Length: 342
Image 1 (cartoon, rainbow, N blue to C red):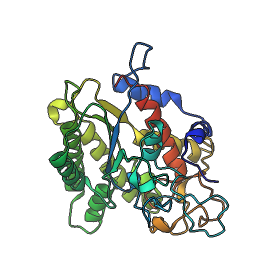
Image 2 (image 1 turned 90 degrees about the vertical axis):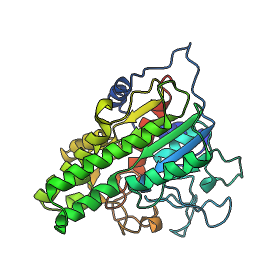
Image 3 (image 1 turned 60 degrees about the horizontal axis):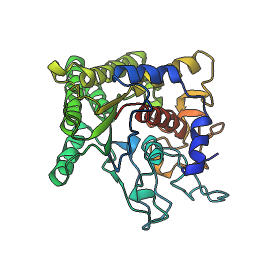
Image 4 (image 1 turned 30 degrees about the vertical axis):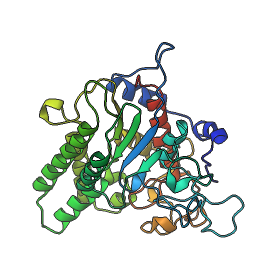
């Protein structure tokens, strides 16, 4: 089953799963947001800029305006395709694609109708916080963020994997790795602060925690001790990013910020399914849906493991969201963006 990105199926995308409004309400409260009143002008971004890693990355198509742009998830297929590699980028949308669709913003990477491009893909494969720093540097060197910019930022997974491997190889102590994870979370917060200000004359930034890596198929394949290490590293990174402004965390910037707690969302889903319940379509939270959990650009709905569908596994690869995982994050992102008084 594919999930198509177009205007008339956007409602179906979000209504196909029950939206967990309690978590969204908590997120809004934490950001100082609330529902937009009739007196509040609806936020209408004219540009979207995406920073991050594979969780936000849409690759270029093979030809200009082609539909075969690939993602690091289980890629959707052309309707009626018999070849399991006939990819249609409009299906199985990334969370940032769902957010762009809400505002009719267009990525060059998935633009078969040759519309005016209004969304910039600055996420990169394998990106860590240092790469986001460089990407923000490059962006600010040529452009200034403005109040009609919607900027998304999600990074940290590859940092945590790197630090975990450092401990396993004995090049880092666990104490040093946990401290470094926090430092990188703080550095990530610093990039958010560069794009907004307290007078709301810069951009509008939606940023997210990263899911606990002990919950991923990568983490679930490890020993209990290693799972605890992955959890500690993830928690330290997220805590660093979320620390108080006076300690170097994300500054309070009026109406310029939206916070997604993807770590808590995935923890809730994992706990519920692991406890024997289903969360809407999700039935598997421990295994990868793709036959090859590493080479995800080649993974499609036609190359999934037995029993997997486009949305019933939480993970597509060893550490990457499935199309179902992206649907959850995308729903939360759209709900948050359309509720905050930006």
